[in-house]
Length: 238
Image 1 (tube, rainbow, N blue to C red):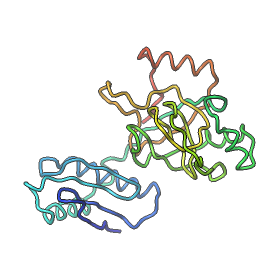
Image 2 (cartoon, one colour):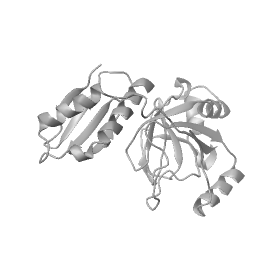
Image 3 (cartoon, rainbow, N blue to C red):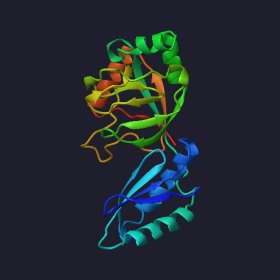
């Protein structure tokens, strides 16, 4: 399946696939986006990916629209899918329910489950980070069971604490910074997903695999203290 190419203003190109939202498509998107990122000397700039799309900025003083499209098509057909095969696996500790997950009960009620069943289903799955967006470091992830899918809140909250873990329809996500939002909050992680002062400000990246580990309040406070002191080491497996 080939990409469709569309002009996005006078210095960007939108590449789109008529494909499903799945791991195979995500793998192809990530591989190609990294190939494009390696071609900055040819005139390409920022590359932004979606579920099945890539937005590519280019320098119109160096490349015409047609030249940029031709180079992108060349990269598309010469995409070495094994070059960026490795995926990271990150474990995210979560304190579920209570003041840290005020919507856990409503998610359970909506799906005719107990809160413990929601926690078990949510923490038993492995999630794929498709792309980042909304706020710095916010992961859009797939892989959540339909058994705990729940609509967004009718009235979004004005402020959601950083680290909050939420559910919206058939997706789960983590709020990396304090922000407004309408996802149903089922827990909170003491980990820091975004640190603008760090050399690598984002904990998660597109293509990562994520699992959630249930923790209790004592461990939550212990990890939070380690994070604030800069001593916490995330569990990351390659």
